[in-house]
Amino acid sequence: MVHVRPSLIGLQSYVPGRKVPGAVVLASNECPYGLLPSVAARLARLTGGLSHYPDMGAGHLLQALADHHGVTPDRVAVGAGSSEVCGQLLHTVSAPGGEVVFGRRSFEAYPILTAVAGGTAVPVPLRDHVQDLEAMAAAITERTRLVFVCNPNNPTSTPVGESALRAFIDRVPEHVLIVVDEAYHEYADPSVVPDALALFGDRPNVVVLRTFSKAYALAGLRIGYCVGAPEIIAQVRKTQTPFSVSALAQEAAILALQEHEEVARRVARTVEQRERVTRELRALGYDLPASQANFVWLPLGQDSTAFADHCLANGVIVRAFSGEGVRVTIGLPEENSAFLTLAETWRPAFT
Ligand SMILES: *Cc1c(COP(=O)(O)O)cnc(C)c1O
Image (cartoon, rainbow, N blue to C red; front, side):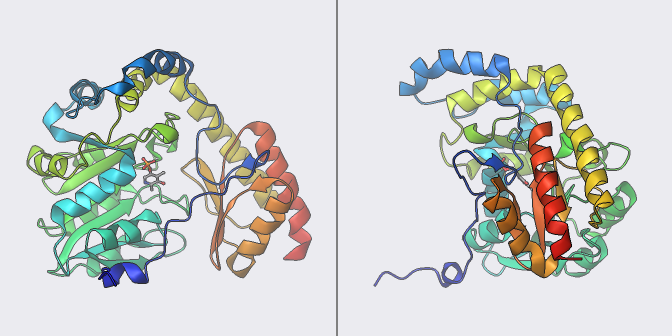
């Protein structure tokens, strides 16, 4: 019998959103508007080059990202989705017994990637659906290597504000890497959700994570990145699986970055729909936190799975976290309407 790492045996696998042919999918926080048209056209032309390896250093993309953020390219590292970049960051700092602090619940990849990197997860309960930065700071020990702050938080949709984040970063010792995961940055109101790159990008122990999977509509191509101090970024790059970012992903990301206007237009529609869905759910009697992302969180507790089953039985896939709540992605207006109708028919069952 092969000796398997004990830390993997009891580890829960990542649960991807379900796929059911013909169903409305509001389970994975994807962009409902499809590929950006210019990206789709470019990708169709690029497939002939796929017999060759991509640029392993992703030089053009790094330069484009550096220009986009007004930093030097040595401050940027890319990966096959920001999930891979999370893993790279963990591998960069992890050591046997090294602790990794994050909110619970937060992004479900954190505990998995932590275990795979050989770290010890230290989940810290949320407070009123918000990451409790004071409790997270208090959970830091001399064994702590990394802290994830997911802002706004997946799956609860809530942000931490600038003053709380600043106090937290000031309090965390410099040997601990603080990873601010801003996967939903584009959907957030800048007056509510701080831009960690602009505010704390100069700190030697702060790295900001961004992705092309959400607002840039490239979830299927797998491309994400982080921005941090050159010293840490140089090490993070070593941990990337060679050639993990495909040539198509690199080209698509460069082009998508140029599409600010179309991306902003789509984001505005999603934000408008998010406010509509929130308003209508509240009018139906649901109690939900204000969202800063492209999804809403229904803290339905023990009813969560039954609610998701009710939706699934009627052709709408949402994401239940058993015993906690349901995460519902903001889709096209008519998809949101279909969901709201189901939320309305469900209501008598829990009031
Ligand atoms: C969706 C998401 C990501 C992005 O994942 P990719 O690997 O880039 O597709 C990262 N962090 C959080 C919190 C997310 O919700």
